[in-house]
Image (cartoon, rainbow, N blue to C red; front, side):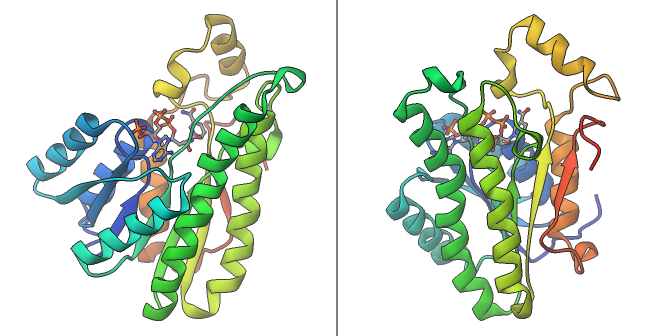
Length: 250
Ligand code: NAP
């Protein structure tokens, strides 16, 4: 594979499973040294690390709960202590707590906002200080088409994902003069644990709204993230790019 990311240090939050795991593997395959972050799935994170190392790459696992500011601060410190700097931050960690608005509990709201939005804020704030000083770096936020279009039953998740787009645009404006780029990726309906539990009817309904009539794979998302992290995307910042097989048409 082309080594577009050689000598780069990357941190991918929530990369023990699903899209994050694939992003970690793809960035490593393109030459980056990768910090694989996980919250609970230690064995899965170690497997991602092992697969990267077996393929000739460099990676290490780091435990941290992104919804906790101190935990994220310690994570960034640990990554920099271990690898010397940080060039690429991918804010991927995310959860769902679906339910209709009128039945949504405060916890369901707060848990999703803290992990999916505040987590990215904590990590980006810490990374920005390093990247501004280095006069180089990039941040990629994994949003969702739901953050653009909304979705019944996902008010908390859609609000967090829309928040990520606002965060992306604002921070892109703040950091552009320091040569730090910030972009968002908006996946559509991707095959992972997050979508595995959907009832058949919901799956069929989602598929019927996709022009390409198939779900996406984590690899489809990882390919875009690798491009955005590379110098090929040197003039792209503040954008939200969908990877959704034609689910939304901006
Ligand atoms: P997934 O398979 O459920 O994996 C979620 C990952 O996030 C796991 O590695 C998990 O780590 C980690 N995580 C959860 N809470 C965390 C926390 N507090 N701190 C650190 N890590 C945490 O999800 P996925 O489908 O790959 O989704 C990845 C991202 O893509 C999410 O932001 C999601 O919203 C977004 N997305 C997914 C889809 C889709 O269709 N799948 C569509 C659009 C956007 P542990 O297992 O260690 O807890």
